[in-house]
Image (cartoon, rainbow, N blue to C red; front, side, top):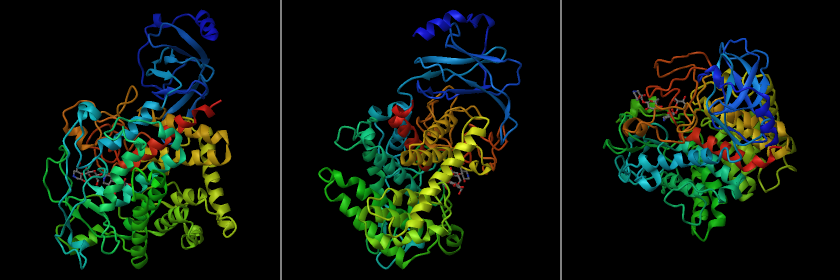
Length: 581
Ligand code: 9MR
Ligand code: 9MR
């Protein structure tokens, strides 16, 4: 308080200069934790040398600083100068003001900074529930009817077996819609559900307290696990009980129009069993079995059944080790042709590795340890729906069963991989025009680029938890800043948060519900210079190729596998915030 008063006396009020809002000051539009590093970036060409942090009415200056030197951004013509106001620690709402440029969005310095966004990004999964009415008590103005019941799903011609002929009716109710579309895909459900389970495993005491106002909030299970269960139970319907195989997806033949869920009555199909689907299923069921074990009283038998189903799917995969889902090839053979998302992953050695790791971590059985030998063939890059090798590394490294003695080299390589990737990110952040790892590599900018920022954050937090290096923690915070506005586009990429966030995501309910505000808590895909949707983009440079238009599924869709790492990151930072010193 002393500091605030003396600063107030020191500086003349700036409101007399009639400053306007400007897009040219990029800040995390949520703000900063009181003791954290606090950076804003000025992207206007201007002779100003000083910046001010003022109250939101611009009347009182609480901090004055000097702008840094110009840095050119790596993937656009943007040039930045940093405004560092780390020394300001007083909680409150503020703006950054640069004379002649204007003032920024309002942001907050606060101790509970990511509490609300952590809840909302998790609540987004509730909003994605299929076959479930969203009651006004939980969904507010976004309440809606249940959507696709999926109680009469047809076995597609690509998926017939002796016991289930073409057109056999199965129930595959529930689960989360994948994205802006209304289909449900096992491969993408795998990484998503696992990321949420890992969030719980890594920060269980935090999540034990975290309520998000869903219908199950009053039961004894943590809300995050209630939400995960909603999808897990659906995943279990996707396993053929006769042979243990797992259908690749539950889908329409063609995407629904931009209508509310359940408006169309198009038939739904369970399509071909694939090795990738089976192994995703194994990994998730093995992990769920481990996580749900302590809740046996509430969920009698479920942990054991999950492990049992995981073993059956594992056996199916052993017998069918390389069945790749190839939609184009299928469409030449089977009717109706299926035109929805493919998630056709041509390489499954990483899925083998991940499934083995989760089975090993849950059971300690040696059969699942030899997969460690395939480490050298793996492409050890950030996790995505089509490369899950690193999820296996995380799982092996956290296993309670010993690995070191037998596979010392591999163990070292797994650890080294985490640290090397984390070290690289720290170096990128130090050189970057926005002081963040995200956006340094050209390869960061693909369909769903924002999920890369979040997954980098997860990796950095694993490295931090393993080694305690504060630089890793800082780089994770910096990537959260990127997602929330400190980036070349100036967007806070989570719906419903910040001064400028997506209003028109490619998300059927948000488009069709007649409500101006999109359904909240969704991380949009983000800058994607490939612009596969061929929509009009106002900016097209590598790091600015984003458009807030519902036409744009390549930059402005939402998806469960993008939201899950956002949930992990924001909540992990909130759980670890006392580490900021
Ligand atoms: O809505 C679909 C979205 O979920 C997918 O990511 C995208 C790419 O597969 O396709 C979208 O659907 C579009 C389809 O591909 C072409 N016709 C227009 C559809 C809605 O924009
Ligand atoms: O996220 C997926 C991205 O990596 C792929 O390049 C793209 C095209 O195949 O598909 C994305 O996933 C979409 C899925 O196919 C259908 N539902 C919407 C998903 C997000 O756009």
